[in-house]
Image (tube, rainbow, N blue to C red; front, side, top):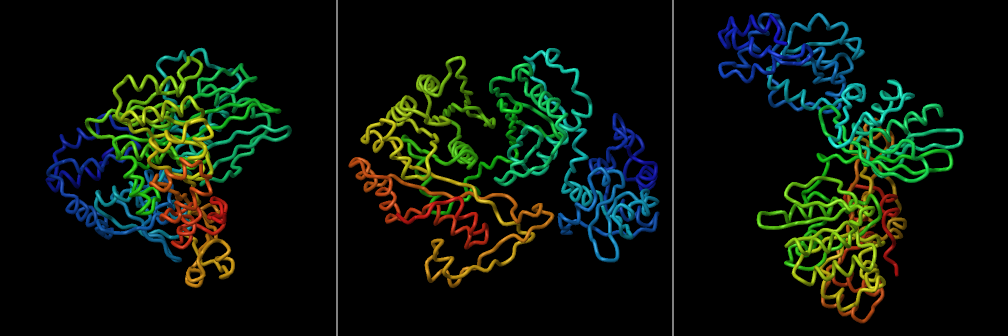
Length: 556
């Protein structure tokens, strides 16, 4: 709440009336930093206010409007402490920590703050808007977020029916900790795994699974039951797989968790996939395409009709690529319909359908229905069999743009996969525009990146040209606190974009092999997954190990 000291300074300087200040204090919690709302008062002058406060309390004033403070420095205090002390570290040296505040009444806490930071503390006064900008960069800690985990209940579910007596508050708090930590670390999946004598919880971070929790075996049933209740699954059914969804608000931010349970030898394994709408990248220029690849891909999706396929293993970013394509195509006057299993993100202006096999709503039946809905663009989650492939090809040949995915190793083998499904070569040639194959490579952590020695022979063996191998610098992450000692932070996509040129179409009609198609495409300028991965290595974005493990050799 607005403090007496602030009221005195504001009213004495004539920047606001007591009535205006009382209005700010109405219906406010005590722990809210409501003094920042002074900025909304038209007559309030924050610089004049800060200087007045500085003079009154004898603390140095510094305008931090254009100051650049490193994220690591700001993270020196947890968010709850920042709110408590109204102080943000802006400079850390061997001798002391300089903290910025707009509230000099916290000066008596200088000694306690010094204990928390384990260094002597110097206070400075800054203006409210500068402090607010700094505060916006303060991240929530796991401890901050545990208590904010709130379930978003579905209106059509009777929650009274989903209760379990042996789930205590300790289990609820423990599960909240797991979900909050996964959210704050940017985890893609949570694996809850029961074994004969142990029980572990692993996070998939940047594509790799890491053990994060090893609770006692006695907590296995309560934790799994708690997750199943949250996902609105049948907790009494332990003999068959179940799928559900958890909707949460963490730190005021809505997050979806897609939940899958699977009976195993020693109990149910539960896997949760985190779906954070704010992390969805819909800007095609930021996905990782090289300029020529992006040009070919855009040309393919902007054709008035035809089929564009994206291929890659599970978790390779296919959905993100398709969503970015649809965001590019989603303009006024266009009707876009999708069939997904399941819909991962809600896209405004796009008609999304969840496939439900149990009621007969399959990819095939959804596609048939779409064709009666006057569509311009159709996205089908996956072409799994001849029936879906046939309808997709038919739609592409009758004036519709069709987007879909397949599970193949590279772009050329996607063409042969369609042929092996039973689709006629002349139909593939007539309907297919572009095929994109993709993988995700872990990015080197920029905080601990260092040059890694690699011999010329090793680089040539990996696929670099001899002339390039002499000049290229290869990097590797040393491991630090930022990347949890892994040397990697984040992921970058590598692509292989195959355009259906006249030569490629000729090979398809002649039943050419995937190797023949690949060789012809390379001659026409296609960069393979391996080539793209090595480019990322040369740019210092990823390591040789990641490039080799996520792409096959081009030697045919």
